[in-house]
Image (tube, rainbow, N blue to C red; front, side, top):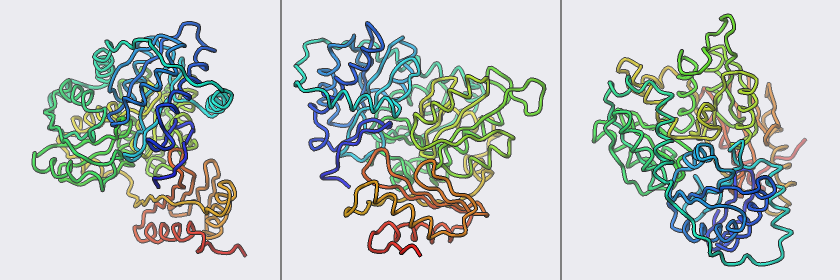
Length: 481
């Protein structure tokens, strides 16, 4: 869905079609509202800025600067990965950050991600309602800004991010493995920090300068897959344009999908005996409880891995901030907690509470280095096996969004009567006795609903996603008996 798409304002940030729902003036209005939020919390704030590599980024950043300039000292880190900016928010003792990015959205989109200290996580639902209220109450145009924006901390931000990630890894073991890694940032902001990480870990880095859509889905990774085989690499890694998502490619050129990034990271962290700050030995005296946090749309393989290691599982609604809040709560209780989303977003709280592909790459390299030479596909073969399909669908245009969504969810629930568990934590998820499940939920980043079907049986997943797509078409929705 492209032309005519509305501006989307949610706890995933602000997203719009460039030149339509999102312009520099729109960026200025929302940035000014964000500035008022910051000023209400901090007297003399420092506000970090960054952006991904989309062509519309500089103009939108200039608009954001107009809005933010009256409210604090602006420090522009330039083109940086969102996790680098988020990490810098704590390291540089800043009070807020704004990143011009549409993350995984297609190329015609751009947006803004907004962060507040001290939590250093994206805005939650209450914050977004506050932001909307300030935007709606504004009745004067945003004036031109004459404030200079310094940009002398770019290198510091990259260096410290890499150093902090390496501090949580067995870097000598990784260096000794002398791994050859192809990396494909998709032309995005992850290029420089990823290259630095690979060099720091003693890897031979092979840059793949692909021209693909941002989201690192398996079907987008043809150039990386070919390069991994041609260059005889041990691993391929791919990111979206702001580098908070991570997908993997094995040495044979196979792409297992974003979901398995988190599965592998969770299994590795639960098996790891050091590096936690608090030793975690299940059943041991005084051992910290280990907790895995994921959202309701993430593969059930994570549930299986948590159960295999005796860890407690916590589920949240979709949205990075929901995971961040849940993880912060578990850490505050003294638990060893980590997790993420099935979109390839790994969250490791000892570093920060946001999705971070740089951390994810480090953990995967550590797993390979500790694996006695076993290739990635051998590690993945030991993971629980599910077949999954993900699709997008439009809601019935003849109804309000709320009514159309309610009708769709009711139709889906009726169409799958043999469920053993129904969750409405975020949209609808219906689970079955053999581990299969289907899910439907409204997107936080696009004007669509997202459909998921996953099963240990490939044929079941195929039939279920086809049924969901039929139901999502207004003319084919079954009548409720």
